[in-house]
Image (cartoon, rainbow, N blue to C red):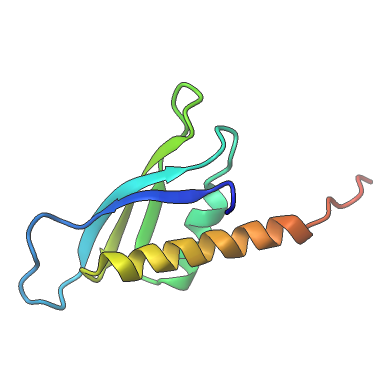
Length: 103
């Protein structure tokens, strides 16, 4: 398991009408306090067009971070799976990244 995980994802309390309407979901990520969330936000936003992800900053050095994702289908498992997939992609990329030499 990586350093960043989806702790909780909440669907809206009321199902949308029509059934295929897009919704806003919110939840919590667990991440190191010094983690830069902008890479995950940028990756999500590039891959999902109209859907947007916003992740809050670490407060009081807490590893819990609130997030909101908008314009997604009313399917918690699909949204969670996509978030977890993108987190894994970022973590795999971080493992293989090298720091370029300063000139």
